[in-house]
Length: 427
Image 1 (spheres, one colour):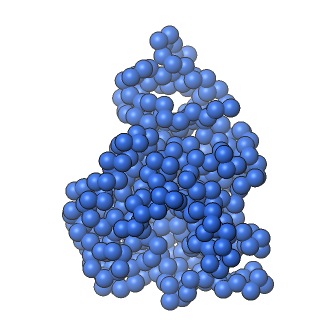
Image 2 (image 1 turned 120 degrees about the vertical axis):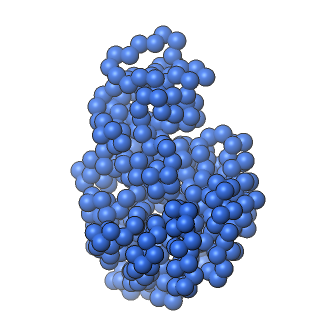
C-alpha cells in the first residue's frame, strides 16, 4: 500500500477539536503523522491547499434498493455515488425486496460491498418480519451477521405493544431502533406538507402532527424502557421541540435530519417537480428554520441523506402517482455549504461532527476521526468549487434530483477509504 501525503489542507476533526492547516502523512493504511511541512519523497502527494480534510463522512440513512430493484440502484452504483459525495461509510435501510429481515440478506450485502470495494456498507435490519409490523425479527441473528440497528423504515411500527417490545429487545443488545416517525392514519399518504401552499395548489397534504404524534409516542416508550431510540429524517418544528425536551429529561434519544429539510421549504412544490416529493414532505419555512436551530443547538445529532433513488419513468408519472424520494449522496455537501456555511449559520467543526463522530458513536464504529495510528478514512472538500449537476456527473444509478441542470457550490474532490484513494474528482 503506497504512502499518501496530503499537503497544506485545513484539517477539521471534531473528535479532537482540531481546525487548523496541516499536512497529513498516510502509511500502510494508517495516519502516520499530522503536522506542518511534512516531507516524504516516496509518498503520493495531494496538493490540498484551499481544501478541507475531514474524517470520512458517515451516512446513517440511505436506500440502495439491493436486493430487488437493480434498475434504480445497486450496491455498486450506490457505493460509487456515496464516495463521490464524500461518504466512506453508509447505513442502508431494509425496505428492499425482499427486506433485510434475515441473516442471509445481511451476508449478501456485506459480500457485495466487499466485492465492490469502495465504501463501508452497514445493513440496518428490520424491526419486524417482512416489515409487516406484527412479529419481531430475530434481532440476535441479524446482529451476529453484522446489522447495525433495526428499522421498518418507510413505515413506523404502529402497534404500541410491538414497538415497546422492540425497544426492550434492542436494549438487551444496546443497539438503536431507527424509527421512521409517521402516523399514516393522519398522513394518509399526503403528497406534500399540509398547509397554505398545499391548499393553494390543491394537493393533498400530510400534516406535521402526523410526525409529531409518533415522535411523542416513541419518546415516551423510550423513556419507559430505557432503550436507545434514533429518530429518522426529522422535519417539523414540533418534533424538534419534543426531542429537545426529552433529551433534557435524560431519554436515550438521538435523531437526524436531511439536507432537503434545512435547504428547501414547501414553496418549491409549486413547480410540481416530483423530485421534491419526499416522505416526510418538505415542510414550511417555520419548520425549516426550526430544523436549522435544532442543528445549531445540538438537538439534532446527525445529517443523513435519505438517498432514495427512483428510475426516471417512475418520477415522470403525474405528481400524485410518482414515488417519494430524491437522491442525496452527491449534493449533500453542496447543500451544507450553501445553506449552513456560506450563510454563517453553523461552523465547519459543528457541521462535520454531525457527519462523522456523532453517527460513528450511534452505530458504535471506531471511525469518525483523524489521528495518528488510526485507520484512514478521509474526505477532501473544495468548499468554493462550483459545478453544474448533470446526468453525466451523477454516479448514482438514478438521477432523481431537483438540482439537475443547476449550478451549485461545494464539492468533494478526493476520498480515501482504509488508506486507499477510492475517488478523485477529474477536472
